[in-house]
Length: 472
Image (cartoon, rainbow, N blue to C red):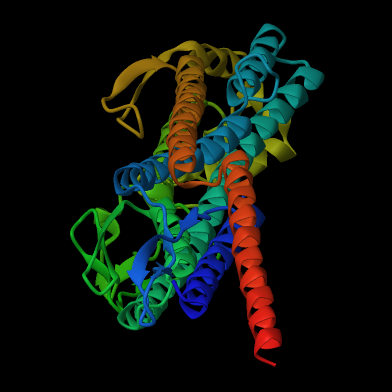
């Protein structure tokens, strides 16, 4: 072998080893970078034009596991939906309180009931009369606060949907742009591993919002499809979701649909964060409002007496004369908890609980106190799929109990889904992530190889120098 051939062999090995060291150094530097996949570069023996054999490196590739990646994408969708639902269900439970906690509607109803029992025992007592009116006001105010609290949460959900749609659109645009860059670089046989990692990160963002699947075309671009079969990204062609936030929300508000390229797709969005948010906004929270509306309507009906000489306040559609409470719309109100109040004439004259138009009447307070313990018929509402006949107190406890159960189930499911997501993520990281011990060991091996090639070159240089000296 001539010195020229040996030199070319050594230079070839030096360059290949240097490239391997660069790849390994990049892996080590990005070991803790989220979404980073271990990069590799293969090398092959090639015949050199001058004779002999050298080493040639290929394009840098990343380590990937398509099956685990697909499983993680699907599980990310489930975990995101569960976490979102858990977050809002905990807030709803906190809003309603717990029976016996002195801050629930069940406790306020008991306080009001006890106050009316005290008036029934001493109907002429002005202190007892005022205490009953005050207890009624506190109960009405709590219903008002519950109503506004639910609608405030719906407004937060509405805003969250808008933010999620923006995040979704940005991630789709990112994939479209990366598709173009990856296709161009692939055609030039250039490295695309880092861009593929970025694209996977964008796909992970999308999978948090809704269930998607994807596949790769021969040119390296990916196609992203929703669970309902809608094309979201194909090459550089990107679909656009639309949503208009409503701002102030009430029980009767008509809220914006989610659109895809101008078409309403709300009903098909049942997965991921968007699916959970839409269920909360359109089903769970309105269902709770409907239950409170049933409670309010029966509270209004059971606290009336023909001899209770309250006058029609005129504050709402329903004539509330002869009623303890007022400002409700029994016929058409969808959220009477938002408006109910103690009849203004009773607030002004608590003695109406004892004095009828014909004089003192102890049966007024006694009848109302008795009615509060009687059963009433509640129409199907929310999670109560059928009508029921029960007491106000029991119905209030059922609302609180159902919400607490839903919150507990949401937490349990979120914990399970997140654990499963972490498990799959750990498996994927084990397969495609950076093992520092292994990379450092490989780095030491290639550093030694680099040194060996350098020594060969140095030896050849010495031999050349010796030949030149002989020739001179």
